[in-house]
Image 1 (tube, rainbow, N blue to C red):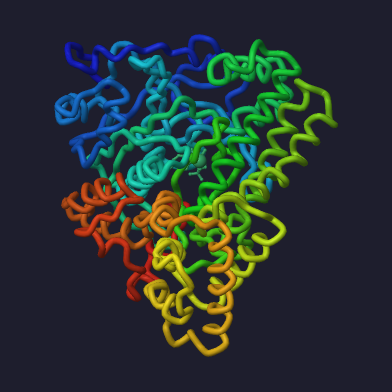
Image 2: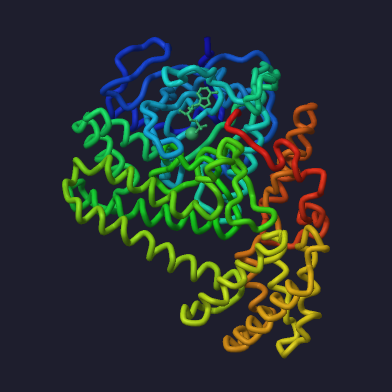
Length: 536
Ligand code: AMP
Ligand code: MG
């Protein structure tokens, strides 16, 4: 049983549980796996665990909630955010949603291992839903255990905070806590299951609603509940759109398209590959959600995917993400169509996605190479050529763009072969730099230098602008794995160090240079560093 105690800073959190108050829940109170009809959620309690230990917390998220660092370091905090202790005002529940997985409708999925504790209203009047991931089974757990392992929890915790500090819309992570229980996982689904330490992450977001929450109701023809959920969402998360009506639903869909485009552009900017862009992993607020087998581009490779489950089809590869975003929005449009019944209007919004993405892409790529603005007539070709060249030899994306900002420091014509020199740190295989490659790169650098001259921006200013868009530090796949390897031995120091490093991803941090280097060779084919699965 979970204990309910009081008298601490945590008890002064102000809860307003609108989701469970305003929407219908499952009438069956018992926690067993089932199809849940005519309901948006099922009430369920987190499982009690034997010996929870705090691994790390985000002081920024704690602050946002109004919690001091002192209270994060109490046993009470650990007990609450592992799910052993419920605060009196919490009303825990798991949400019902469906989804298209790898292109096919998968029916009911739901929060199989996520339990929402309630909605906190903070001092700035923001609504923040607290959600435990890995706190035990729910009616939506299907044939799985509702638990999460330390490995995947470290990845979720660090990456969501890293994304936030990169300026990318994302759900947040308040805490990472080990449970003291072991969890059996077959990491590569190859018949070699292993016991791993269990963990719970407390995620925080204004809303955890996904495209799939709407799709499931539509697929079941539960149109009255579809309308109730949509109206609730607009009232709660999109109040600026006005009272729900057909016109408002269209504006709402347009805004979801806009935020989705913006999110994916950010991913492309920093080389983030989500790995499982199923519609149940698409946030209605355009936030990056569900950090599973994600990865960061090392060598710039358009069709790279970190997810071994997707190695064949490469549906969720880096360069396919914009297209999949649109495909997912089409599924959402189909789901909400019965509320609007205006095919043309929805199609029009969907059609505008490509143009909107292209415009954003041009602006983003121009900014990455330090142009003041994008002149498509000339700059499309400049950007396109660069992307081709980047793929000719294995080139580290993060290092390349960061170093590009340091070129041409003299504000005058520079010898091009000398200019190329600082970029060499980005190449994984120097032997690939043959004459033909060098010639292509030098030609590009020559055109680039000419183009920069048109802007007439002082070098230092250009560099500063580029350094704000091209991060120096990202959560390289092997770095996350090193932090996991240590944490699995009980040493949380690298989790803490990376969390600190990634708070300032755009700053030079001279003592941290080693974390900006390219992936070491040993990590090229190592599990967790280059190959990931959905087993988490
Ligand atoms: P994901 O691919 O992690 O987004 O998960 C897809 C679906 O599987 C969601 O409904 C999850 O809640 C569910 N799921 C994933 N892992 C587990 C688990 N260990 N226990 C229960 N449900 C899970
Ligand atoms: Mg998911």
